[in-house]
Image 1 (spheres, helix red, strand yellow):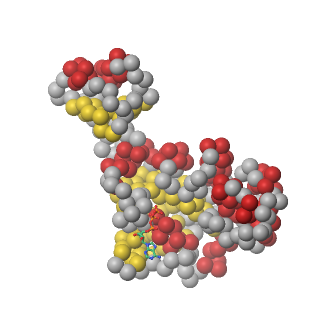
Image 2 (cartoon, helix red, strand yellow):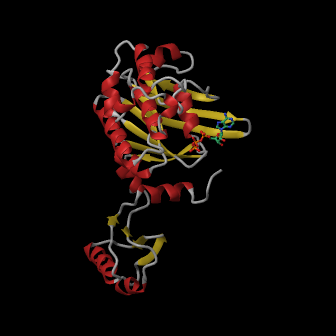
Image 3 (tube, helix red, strand yellow):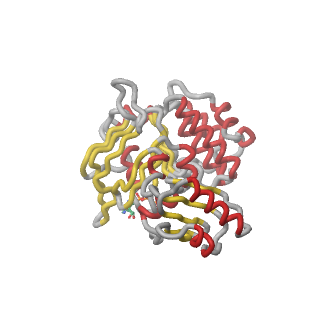
Length: 314
Ligand SMILES: Nc1ncnc2c1ncn2[C@@H]1O[C@H](COP(=O)(O)OP(=O)(O)OP(=O)(O)O)[C@@H](O)[C@H]1O
């Protein structure tokens, strides 16, 4: 289920029973979590679920009230001097002086590292080669975001914390970042990623942890998480509001058929090949294109919404 670290190697991140309260709000409530080396773990949760607080405790910016946090085997609060050179943190805003140029900023961060990556190679890898001499304040939001990622990676960290690394990026830039995260994993780097993009988590993560109200509500590989509650289910994706009457005739009792979410049709019962055929035929007879059929497996978004509720969080 989970990739194992090399014998004797400390997990990249290990949280045991971690609690963090802000006044009357319990942001993190007894959280256990492990990121192995060379593993991408996606931490998902609705707004206010406790993701940022969790990551900030790992980075040593926030002190837990209870439990243990170990990052590369070290305590991020009391051993931060030892830890800092070994981790990469993607700061929103980059801690930048607005007038400094993108290339200068990256060079400066690289200068703090004993064995940095070549900043020019990294700029080119992130599609920033033409922005080398551009002052930070003139970079677009997406370019600033990519520069923050470059700053997190230039010191060859063993572990990186990526807080919504592709928020606000266009599709091309997102793909570049995804490729880079994949390359990090291949190089043995652990990645703790927070994201609101379910496809990003499915695409990149070896392990998904969904939290809500500071507690784990589901965890496992993407395949394991998308199987939660999906036994005896067929999900068909197509345009919304199709007429289900004909499908109810061809799949009579004991099958139950409904449009569970707009454009997501759910058949519950014993799913055999004839049921798959009936669902596909029904969709074609409606003149609609079925874009996806999943058996005994749901989309990550369906699982996420069911586990964390559909109401908006503040
Ligand atoms: N410094 C703080 N002071 C007071 N309350 C805080 C502080 N930081 C976080 N909280 C509260 O702790 C809870 C968890 O917040 P956190 O930012 O960790 O959630 P999140 O999952 O990262 O949310 P989002 O997806 O919106 O970024 C929220 O109720 C938030 O208001």
